[in-house]
Image 1 (cartoon, rainbow, N blue to C red):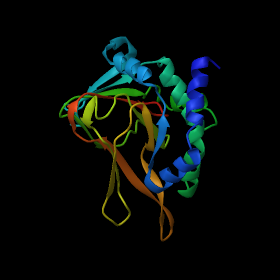
Image 2: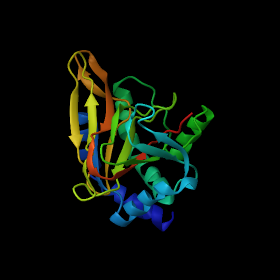
Image 3: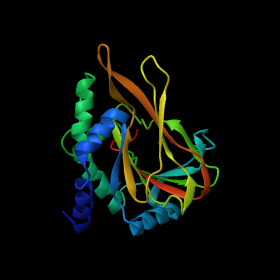
Image 4: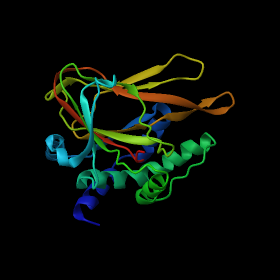
Length: 240
C-alpha cells in the first residue's frame, strides 16, 4: 500500500465508528472527523478549474436543482479521492449490511470496493460518481437523493473543502427524513474545514409497529450568504 493510501486509511480508522454507527442508526448522518488537511482541501478545490480532471459539468439552476455548479470526476480519480473511497468502503460496509438485514433486503455488496464497482459495471453503471461542488453567494442545493441506477450503496460521504465562518457564511448541510405517517424531520450541520459527514444515500431503517420500515431521506445545502464553498462528494456506486 502506498504511503498516501496508508495515511488516509489511518485517518479513517481513527474515527469512532461505534459512535458513528449509533448516530447513523438514530439520525441517518454522522460526522466522521477530519479526513483532509487544509492544504489538501485547497489542492482539491483548485482542481475545479482543470477541465481534464472531469467527465461532466452540471449547472444546478439550469436543471432546477438549486443554484451553483458541480463536476463529476473522470477516471482515474485523483489519488486522495481514490484513497478515501477505498478506506471508507470497508468501514461503511457493516453498517450498510445491518441496515439491509433490518429491511429484509438483499445486501449484495462484496468485501472490497473494487469488486463492488465491477458489479456496477456489469450492470451498465460504468461512470465515476465522485464529484466536486462549487457554491457562491446565493447558491444552494435542492433536497435530493443520489441514485444513478439499480445498483446502490446506501451510504455516502461529503467533505467541506473550505473553512466555514472564514471562507463562507451559510451553506449548512441539510438532511430531511420522511417519517412513517408523520411530518418530515429535518437537521442542519455546518461541516468543519476538511471534516466529513457520512449520511444515507436513499433511506434508513426505523422501528415501526411491525418491525422495521424504510424512512426516505433527502439531502441538500442551505443558501450561501457570502463567500465560496467547495465540497467533495464520495459515492460508492458508479452511474449508468
